Structure formats: structure tokens, C-alpha cells
Length: 84
Image (tube, rainbow, N blue to C red; front, side, top):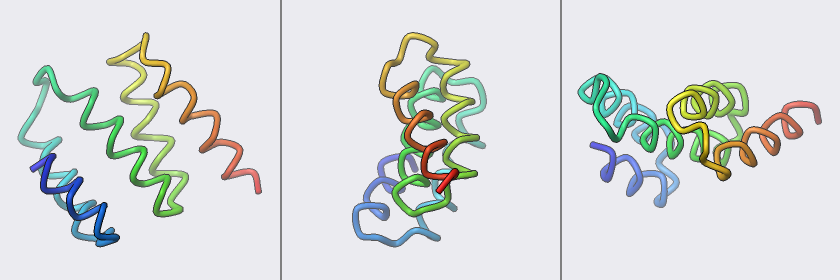
């Protein structure tokens, strides 16, 4: 699901991507890839312009992946985008 979601995102098919990411997270539960799925979901939400959802996904990813600098940097960028 995660890879299919990324493929849809690359095609700019946002709604399909969001559905697939939600399914991937639901199926994953507490699987080891959950932080990466949420990070990628947050990044794609940010690219789509949905900064609120992006920040939520990235914050969830940060709890799972506290040492991931990409997540921390993305949160800063998303917050600055929300303030505009």
C-alpha cells in the first residue's frame, strides 16, 4: 500500500494517495515501518498544500523516529507554510 501511495503521489493523484496511506497505516498497526509511512505521508500532504494534515503526520512520525532530521526539518517547513 505504501509504495502504491507513493506512486499515486508522484502522479499528483492526491486523493487516491491519501486513501492508500490511510490503508497502509491501518494495516501496519504498530509495524516497524509505521514511522516511515507517517513521515512519507506527511511529506506528501505538505506537497499537496494540506499543511495541517502534514504536520499531524509528521508529529506522529517524530514520536516514532525521534532522531530523524528530515522529519524535524519538515515540521519546521510545514509550520512556516501554515503561517503564510
